[in-house]
Length: 442
Image (cartoon, rainbow, N blue to C red; front, side, top):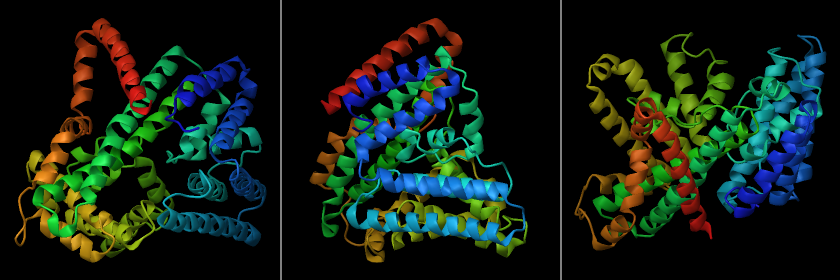
């Protein structure tokens, strides 16, 4: 049972919410744990013993670290062993994903990152370990987050689960967000993935300029809408259960610099790497060379997040170098550029970056780049690409509009000027969107 099935939407979710809200507050963490475990079993029954073993190891490590004295050698050893354990799991499943195309144990990557951050925070005495095993598991195993996150500090969610304050406003906002994420994935992301795969099947020697740019656009937007869909669903379900998760994306393709793009794209991953790597290395406080090294290292780690292979690492290096140029080589020149030109240059640089991520080797990337700019005897367009483009034009246009703040500004205008009308229209629109999205999976 996945989150994009009718069984999940119309049976599992309503039943889970009903059980959750009839349960007294002091047992809500218990019931949420059982709901998440039931969902996990329906997705990956065989993986449950392994993920539970890893989570209990982190749980016991944190309890030991919280009860032992600072400066204790054994305390440091326990923390380091936990880090090695989680990094080992992350590397193993990253490599496995590159080979098989999926990870054999569902949610293992997410829980390893969460567990490692939790243990490091306890080691640094930022907060005490949580001895309540049900509260711990309800946070670590929260079922919609097991796919792609968001990655959050344990201390961010613990107070919300400890003092749950249900409200109809929160539930209604959650339903709207869930529908938004569901539609993003089924209608937009999946269509763009199909478009991207059709363009990718075109042999290199037949690629036109239009085909190369459409390939980058479809890949970039399919990645964005897939990830943001999962984040919207996780955040929406979180609100239905009366606690709030952070935003994962904030119109990254409107960024006016590459540093801003990183700050807006997969926000919680960026913050995770900054908290546990960049800040620990001193950030910008140890001089220019140290700051440049830290920026490059962080961008490389974020690149590897999207795939443990050379091209993803180089994707991070590409961004790291350009961010260093923005901040240390021509900062005044960049700041003096008009905002629209900053956005245009940044958008083009982002699209070009995906030629690195898409390529299986450096030669592929070079081919994509030369084709994008029409070097050599390259056609501007071809009939096959035009057919793919016209077949997907509406969805591509919709993706480009929804990746900006245009829709947000329109809704804000109507909410301010015509609040009653917008409430009714929004309710009807969400019903229509849900029906349309469901029709795509029937």
